[in-house]
Figure 1: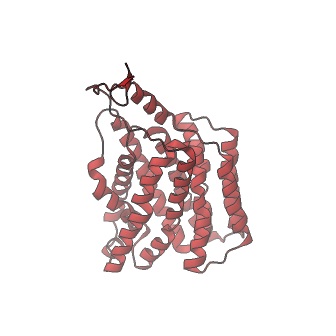
Figure 2: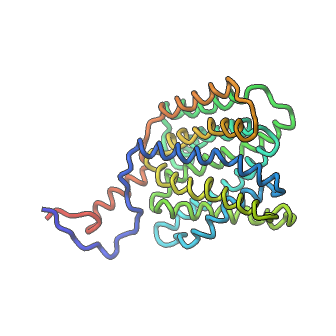
Figure 3: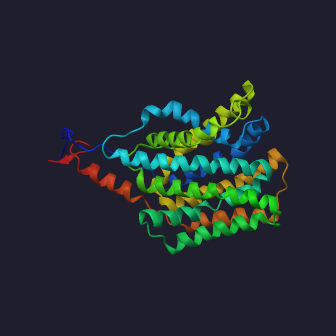
Length: 323
C-alpha cells in the first residue's frame, strides 16, 4: 500500500514535472508561432510612430522584466540555468532588433523567410554546444525549412535589400541559440521562471543602445504608441515565451524549432492582410514544405527534463514511497 513520507528537508529544488504529451506540446509551440507571427504588425506601427528598431525590441522585453524580475533564481543549481537563459535573452534582443530593422524596409514575407532558417541553427547549436546528437531526420527537416525560405524568397533582391537581410540573419542565429538553451539547460526552472531571465537579458543587453539614442527614437510620443508597446510585449513576448518555455522541453530542440516554423505562413498572411503584400505560388509551396518538415522531425524529450522526473521520483514525499 502506498504511504506518504515527509519531504526531505535537503532535497534539491527542481521544476515540477508535467504530464504534457508530445502532441500537446507540439501544438502549443505552433500556437506560440502564430502569436509571434504578429510581430511585424506591431513593429511597423511602432517604427512608423518614430521609434527605432532598438526601442521596439527593448519595449518588447521591458514589461516582462518589470513584472517578472522577482522570479530570477540565482540560488543553488538554478543559478546556471538562469545565467544560460539571460545569455539567450541577450542574443535574442539583438537578433530581434535586426529583424525589426529588416521589416522596416523589405516585405514582411521576405524578412520572414530569412528569419525562418532558425531551425537549422537550433539543431546545429544544440549539437555544437550541448552534444545533442542530431538525427538524419532532424537535419533533413532543418534543411527543408531553409530550402522553403529560399523558395518563398522568389525573385532576387537588389543590393540594398541584400545588405539588410544579411543583418537580419542575426535573428535566426540568436533564436536558434535560445531554442537550444531552452530545451537543454533550463529544466531546473519552472516555465514562468524561464521567461524572467530571458526578458531581463534582452533588456539589459539593449539598454546601452537605448541611452545613446535621441528622445524621439526612444520614448513613445502618445497613448496609442504606448498601447502598441504594451501590446507587443504581451502578445509576442510574455505570453508566447511562457507557453513555449513550458512546451519546448517536452519535444526537444529539433521539433520545437521546426514546429515553430509555422510562423512563416503566418507571416505571409500578416503581410497580405495588413500590408497588402501579394501572396505568391512560391510562398504557398514554402508553407507546405514547412508543415511537412514538422511531421518529419521526431520528438525527443529534453534529457534535463527526464533527469528531473527521475530525481523527483526518488525524493521522499514528492509523490509516494512503497510501504
